[in-house]
Image (cartoon, rainbow, N blue to C red; front, top):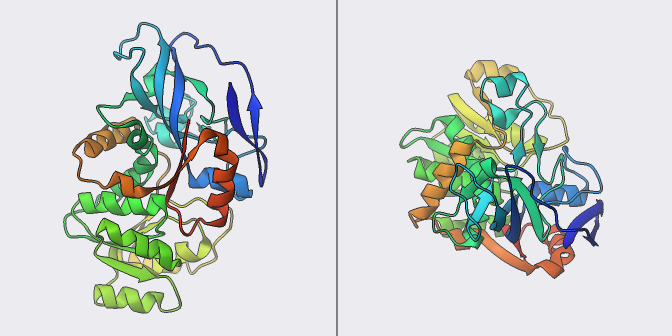
Length: 336
């Protein structure tokens, strides 16, 4: 079989290897669709904090079960599935308390370990989720949606809360949609006019250009009170500070973005505002189940989240063009 490999920053190649064999408790999967995550793009650019080289990217995917043994979950050959790609150690303090999404030794596919961008992969059956009637393309959106959904769950949003999501990339958009579904009034913010324009099709309440007038726009949108919840979905020092500044007194801030740079700021502002700062990492199995159920209701414009689909043989081109045109693309997928 063939697989996509990021040899080093800026270089993608195709390699060949034998089709893997499923071990006990595993299923052999044939890839159908795979989404290029922001972390995959960061690996390509050399800016992602949690990876090494060479690396097989990919942890957002749908696949068909080619081979599976008897199992207690009802999985059978021919079923279309997705999977939880965050491998936890099961032994650290976080895992002992059930917080497996923030395992101290977490290995996410495509980041700390090789990922799914192969024609065939094996996965533990306990990590699989049935499609429940979703199309393979929509099923490949479940994992990235879970990232934003988990962060919004962390914020404990109540009806009519004012929420600002900073970053109108895929994770920002799905976090904003998740906040909408929780009953919030949602504004979204970005430096790129094109991303803001594209985000308008999702029907958020407000759109803020992140420029020198950022705080003036925040005050105008909130009557000078700030947002009940701010969500940082970029991973830069500047947007982290924006999320702190835009939050209301006794507000909540969720940190979704991943970056390598440090932020210097007046930490007393956290004390002054009594601001709750919540990190959000990966997602839980319950998030996967709930997002699949949410997709099944049919009222989320999933096709609008997917802006580009490349055939498998154009995998290198997909990374190159996403790198050059990331402000005009939302979710980029590879069709295997």
